[in-house]
Length: 131
Image (cartoon, rainbow, N blue to C red):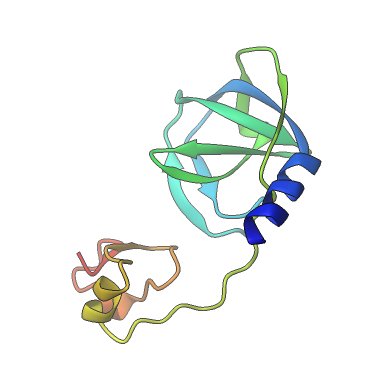
């Protein structure tokens, strides 16, 4: 049932897809908001497929999907209509008692900004917990 509902939402959200180049180092955010959690930084000059609606573009960089500000993307190709996924729902707080629990749940390693990350689990403070 969940998959059917997601498919219905996907089909109802139209956007435009194009190839875009990042005009500076760009934050890839979990949500389409300037206050959204930063997942990673996409280097200036990186070319990606983007699907833009309003002032945000959805894209995937090194396996992580998220949003970048449209003002920081220079379009390289003509746009093509496609369906894009809606913004992810806010997740409930995920807390692992320790790295053993995170590994057992299949969540390790946990990057800073991902659900379940806590400084307590990141012994060397490099942004990667339970490595």
